[in-house]
Amino acid sequence: MSLRLLHLNACGLTAHAWKGGRLHREDGFATDDIAGFVRYLSIHSNKRFRLLLDIAEESLVTERIPRLRGVDRKTLIARRLAKRFPGSELSLTVPLDRSGDSEDILCAAISPPESVRPWLAALTGSEARIAGIHGCALLAGALRERLGETGSAGLLCTVEAGWVRQNWLVDGLPRFTRSMPLPSAEPAGIARSLVEESGRLQLFLVGQRLIRIDDPLEIDWLAPPALAGAIESAFREQKRPAIRIRVTDTFTAATRLRLPDPPQSTQCSDLLLAVLARRPPRLQYAPATLRAVDRLHRLKRLAYGIGLTAVAGGMLAAGWANQQAAAMRRDADSLTGAAATFAAERRTVLAGLTVLEMPADTLRARLAERDGLLRRQRTPDETWPAIARVLDRHPEITIDALEWKNADDAGATADSTQLLGRHRSSGTTPAPFRHFVDELALERTLNVRTIRSPDPADGGRFVLDIKRPASR
Image 1 (cartoon, helix red, strand yellow):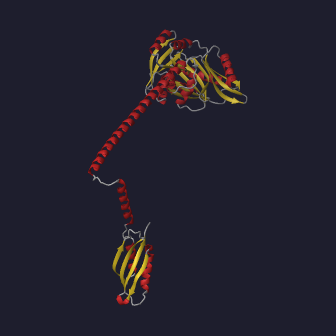
Image 2 (tube, rainbow, N blue to C red; image 1 turned 90 degrees about the vertical axis):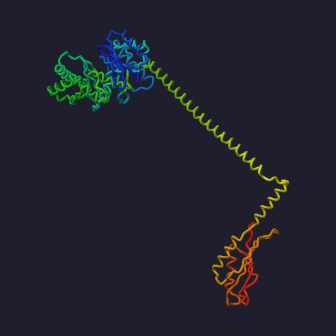
Image 3 (cartoon, rainbow, N blue to C red; image 1 turned 45 degrees about the vertical axis):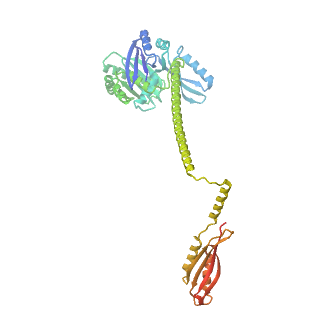
């Protein structure tokens, strides 16, 4: 990721590179070394830059305006910003609470911006990609949240080399910010001065009605390890019950921020830069005109990415179409080969056939006759099983012979079976024989006709004519 983080304070500007989740210091420039900064920008012309302003000129104020919409609201806010921060192009507003016909807005700006303008001129003159301009006060809420501090309101104090910045935060937004120099003394002396300043700051917040007089003041201190212990000891010795403190050294804070390596220095600004690189806040001071080069570059990269995606998609589609065409060619070649093989086999079969000296009409007539004979041909497959089933129920009947006659070519409507048998009974007109005949008639709708009834004098012999209706 080609991101460069610039840190501007009262001593000058330092440039850092953010690579692999680590902060690497690249260069530093004094307040009057603008030419060196321009040379640095020429070397890194294709990089993105985010500028962190750690200066005393960052100002915050809460304004109450009527509830308006559209152009009227924008015009009123622009007029209030021009009145509060004259001549400052680095400003922003944040809506806060609404009540009735009015609303509160937070106005923030770098005012006066004279200490920032030479560096901005160098950035814009080099056509650098400015991704954002941020203030320490606007980053304080994100830093406090990442450190795991709870509470909707509290004071975050960050101690730098020779400076301390105090930020009063409500719901993650700064309502008051101030920078003050530290006395040149040993850590214990600096800590005692910070305790005294905390008491004065508490009275100031009560006077501004930011806290109530009976509410304890919660302060989160972020300081280098050499000073963190001294601050905690100084507050313990002073025994101020109206002030509750939590002291975190920069190394512990780096661990809570999950930085891969300990920071190269013990400055709180390095932690702010890490928060800025990982999750830049939405609120920032750079107007759209300063971010135009970065937006244009991002649009170019987006268009380039879309073009590459389109080209890759076209190549994939072309490759898929080529594979489909190759598969179709293989199928066509296979079908052509199969057709040639079939044609050769057909010629072989035709060459082996006997040529009939017969007209085509005569051949068709003979085939039709053959089909008719096949349709009229029948077998006793249905009649004889029916006779066998009935005979199983009449053991007094004995079969001597069965004669099957197929329908003739004269148009007979049924096939017939001559059944010759004997009936063993002592009566002259045996009822069992009649039952036998009736049951035969019921089987498969057979037509049964008695040609000769059983004659006891002739051993009970009889003859039946059984016909099955022809299926048409």
